[in-house]
Image 1 (cartoon, rainbow, N blue to C red):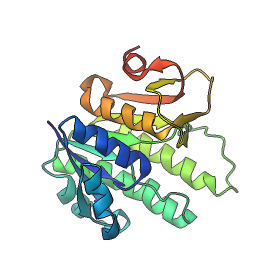
Image 2 (cartoon, one colour):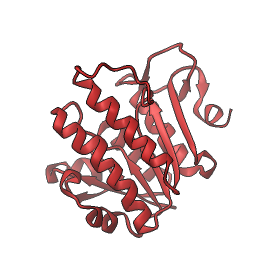
Image 3 (tube, rainbow, N blue to C red):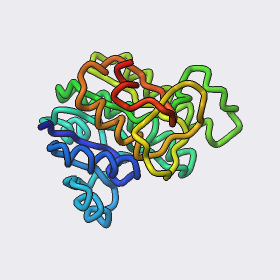
Length: 213
């Protein structure tokens, strides 16, 4: 059993991952901004912790993560303002990486986006540029750390029923959130995925085979 701290605990992928992880015997502390979300977190097997990541200092975040076995970052502005996107998807994510290092929590899993690359191709005059740029920067900072990191980078998320199968072959540009949660849970349990960026979409390969193929 591992003690996992999950940032962005009320997101759809986060709640699904919380259920999978808790069913497998792990303890999940879910960081949420709104105390009204506490019951949803508990219903999925997590233990809520109310804290607004946009307002947390490096010291605050280090205090939050200290004593856990792994950090799972799944927080995001979720299509809010551009300023909020920079503040959460870039700045808070980067601080959380630094906080994990400061607190001595070596295992870190970042839920990112399949296009989070230096040449992501999103025009600067589009609102989505802030998200693409933020994800690229946060991922790069994580890769440059000494943490046992894994970047989980799915394509466009859907609410379709999960299949337990994924790929990265261009056959799809979408993936069900339930399958992303499956990948996240398997990655957290598998130290051999450290040092990898795992880009994927929906497909035909069982998750376990895809991760070790």
